[in-house]
Image (tube, rainbow over all chains, first blue to last red; front, top):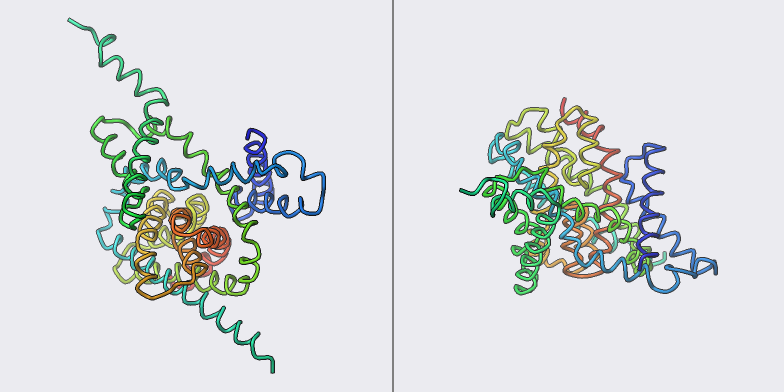
Length: 129
Length: 243
């Protein structure tokens, strides 16, 4: 348990170091995600990685514990936002409406693009000329 | 006569300044909001982020507690966001075959969706006549807060306006995604999750995990990819759209 948490934090730490040193436009934890992914892939081939948290299912259980309540983690930042709603509402209620509209359009366009592309790809693969 | 240094008031002053009180409140309010969400079969309107946030907001208002004092306790929860993002690697690894087989649709959808998110908000904001510094602050609203605030700052806009709009977008996106996709009869959980993560970043991803694991995995991928795409596209898009 402790070793698994330590490993996850280590990945994040390395991610932060990478992002800061090359000033990449992605958050440190996202790079940490990629590092952990590489480690998980690597353990299938490299025996040494199967020792410790990567081998005994420790990382899996620590991860599912954290992800089970992902919503909770947004509460502290969300509360801060409630206190600054005036920053936005001073520009009128229209801003709330356009944020909702933009979210709606983005959801539809993204999902439809995904589906159309994967259907086209299936058809193209299914009918070799 | 009781002095201010003893009695219930002194106890309140003491407790409200330790992390314990606000951390406990955060966990208990969330536990209640989550129980309601579970009892309503994860109804979109019973979103646990939305209800925890306003309930705690009201409590802080009624007790006259400044946000930094609250955050002193809540920061322990906030901190876990980073490791939890890293932890997304585990479901991603477990579903790697499904994800890899959808790499082309994901690449196309993140480009089209990422551009749609930026262009739609900039066009709408100009349409309703918002001042240009607010329009700039709105442009990166679909990406995770840390990155969005960085983009906004580099455009010379106010990052705190961006932070508020990121949070609003996340909550609204998480609420509308399920009924919207049901109405459009989109049953592919890869597409539904991907759209949720791209539009509503981490809060959309949290919603997607509530509905379906595969949806959650695709949401996490979309959130990460869109952080990259948006930070590359926003500067170009605003230059073109703000002329």
